[in-house]
Structures are given as C-alpha cells and as structure tokens.
Image 1 (spheres, rainbow, N blue to C red):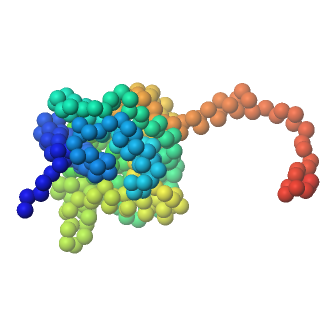
Image 2: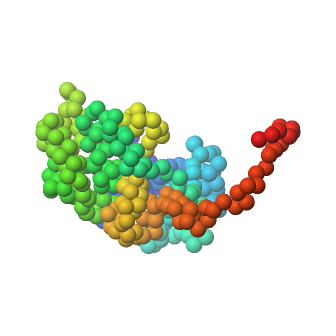
Image 3: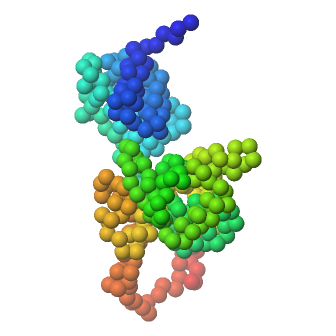
Length: 311
C-alpha cells in the first residue's frame, strides 16, 4: 500500500533532492538537514509549509529550549536548527511557494559562551608518553599537528599523503592541505608498514573486518580512553582542533595564519578557537599591576559560621 504523504513532506523531498543534486551538499550535511527538517514537520504538526507562521515557529523554538520535545536543547543547537529551517523557507519562497512567515522577524537564541577545553603541548606529550598502542599514538600526533576536523580525519586515505603534506576535503567540499612534523611522519610510516595499510588510514585491525575504516565515534573512543588513562577526563575529539589552533597562536603565528591553517573562511570563526588565549594577559598584568599593595596590612580575623576566628 502506497504511503500518502502530506504536502509538507513532499515539499521537503523536493528540497532535499535539490540540495543533493544541484547544490551537491556533502552526505553528512544532507543527513543533518533531513533529520532536522523531518523532526520539524513532525513536532510542529505542519501539513503544508504555507501554514507556517512566526508564532508557530517561535512556539517550536520555545518548546525545544524547555525540553518539551525530548531532551532540552542548548542555544547553539537551537540556532543551528533554526538556521536549517530558515534555509528551507528561503528556498520555498524562491520557488514561488506561498509563505506567510516573515523571516526577518525570526529571532535566533544568542550563542552560548564557548567553554571547550584545550590541551597544551605538555599535556599532549604526557598522554603520548603513556600510550602503548601505535594506532592511538599516531592518531593523536596527526590530529595535534594538523587540527583536522573529525570527519576529514576519519576519511584520510593512503594516497592523500605526500611527504609531510596531507590533502583533505573540508566543509563545502573545499580542498586543502595540512602538515605534519618529521616525527609524526616517521611514526605514521611505522603504522602503515605494521598494519599493511592499503587504502583507509585508520582501520579496525580486527580479524573479521581488518581493513574496514574506523568511524568517527570509534576514533573518539580510542583517543578518549588514552586521555582518561592520563587523568584527563571528558575528552572530546574536536578539542584537539582547538588545541592545535591555540598552540600555533601561542607560538607566534598571526591570527590570519591560524585561519589559513584551520581552513576557515573568516577570522570571526577563527577567533572562537582562540578564546583561551585570554590567559596570556597574565604576564602583562604581572608587569604593570602585580606589586604589593599595603604589604604589611593583613586582616587577623574572619567570620566563620557566625563566629569570629583568628586566621
């Protein structure tokens, strides 16, 4: 029996087909769009996108923020979802679908402050010193040397290597190049020889599926385990990209150089990766402010739980 689709579902099918065949979005981007927009239709009970109003969209955003549509979403996730919906609305309008909603009145939640961790070269060295698995060691070295995105890294193949240069295809199918040190190249060659790599660089190495490539999640779990053993809890794979950016900036690279190494389209995006460099002002503060104010004046008592005690 043929399933009867609503007009909104048919509109979504046409839009996704256009995104894939005309705009040629990557499979990962397509999967995100399909997931977000399908859930949007179901959660708003929209039969036809022409019925969508600003009031209905605002109510959907509010429900996501309050966790009334499943798990509670943070502002960054909501912003991404709203942007995906707006892109679809803009396409519908360009295709002459009658739309009631006024996109200029759509309010995106403000992004949450970036609190992502990053690791110093000393911490990375500590993790590597306790590493007894060659594959995990090499993956950490390459990620810290290059700052590659997770999916780029997972897709790395043998023919992408050219000396210490690695060819990669990033967001929006943009090609680029990243670089590794002599030491990392030597350790990478050791892995290639030992594992007999013939295509994908990061493979499962199990008896049954030896040459099957590791997924992003599989890579994350292996590296996360190593960081946990070094006493660094809560590791996330993208933090190594932040660590790369912060490390090269601390070592004197201009912000525009960092942007080019990260293959960002704008400096504004790059700045979000360097937020941890605020701490570098400590040395300057020491020079101009760290003098002893009233050095011999010290309070001798304090009120603790309602009682005055000597300190």
